[in-house]
Image 1 (cartoon, helix red, strand yellow):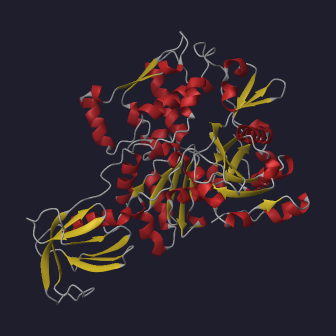
Image 2: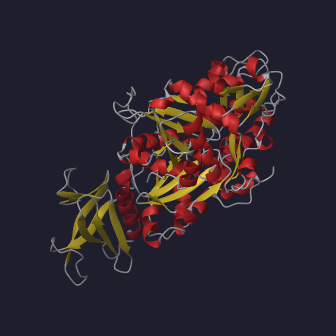
Image 3: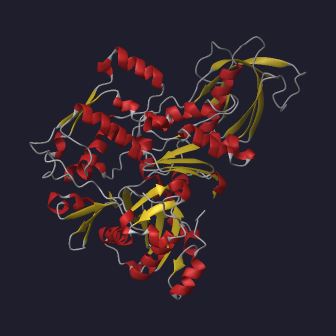
Length: 560
């Protein structure tokens, strides 16, 4: 596929470059209506996701030494020390009269949000900062070989300050009383849309970014494009996708993407002339395509005004933090360090791989044991995606998982049924999957398994942090935030945490954070942004000639 440079917008919109779905659908699925499956895949649920990542705290208890003068901060080592019995628990450091004491501590401090500096030469831990602005020094008793264990435990509790501060959507969504803002999130696989609500809410429209170009030139967008009576009458295309995201190369079918935007407005049942719009876009959409989008929403759709924000920046708003590394994994991988609300531009790393490679690897395995499918048509790809979401996971210890699988195959086998989606009599109603449950996802950490000559996910995260200012790296390593569909894979957060930790010095704590709403994190972040006062000043209005508009536009709204 030829490359498309950002300086060639006409090439970017060439219809010849747009990915077309394989049309040779198998006879088994040719008459099947996938509506029930689509409803499941594109369901908007207000039930928080139950996370697989447990044991977020590393607990430790035992004797530590403290200066005799409790008010002495950063005491010199020559001073006298006395032993007390300490315990870490739920983000707090507690101390007791003795190790025989009950659960009532003599005192405690909140570790969440603190900095822990470890000095191995002095065998001491210096704790400072946090909400209580604490300053204390602890020393591991001589002869006790537990320095690293205490350091790890202290860091795990200190890093817990943001674990539960993520934005929670509120149901039912109530439209904002004074601000009329439509939020539209563009993606290569799916689109989300909604209106600004009084409290953050989930999208009111969520559909696949797929368009049927009918033989008469008309468009059918989203789930309706996949109905059997429609998909026989034209060609299915993806109107927006990356060809080489690291070089800002995107394929862009202008008329089809306009049809997707129009569907968002139709689903929301809003009058654009009475609304402003916030467009949430992928990280590497080039300027030329953004200009096209703004021209369309202002000139043709007649919105009062428009603003642009890139999705990884919005993710941090959904976590309610200002500093961290966003690891957004969907159809593409975007790793974006943000410090105090500002993106570290030179540290952004993007790759055009992710969910597609997992599904492709899974399809190859499914064909081996489920031969009646080719898994090439758009409908069969939906089935393989469902199997992936239900069965696949990331192995915390890949070699150990392989060993367990070879010794006892039944432990890993899974059978995924699609009976609830009313398959036709010619279709298989269940799919058996074994070790492919975790081998297909291993390419995230061993890209050569996918045939890719690139660095692994943890190496890219490490590289992004190393490209950031040196005084922020320690904070970034312990504030890694996941987003995107692939981030829902069980075991991913644990594995990423382990792999990144293996690349950094032992004294640096790494932590990967999960929000139960991370699948819609960018949209929730857009809800937060659209509700603040500064948003009104960031709107571009269509109040001047298009010539002047285009001349003055190129300063993209970052909304940071």
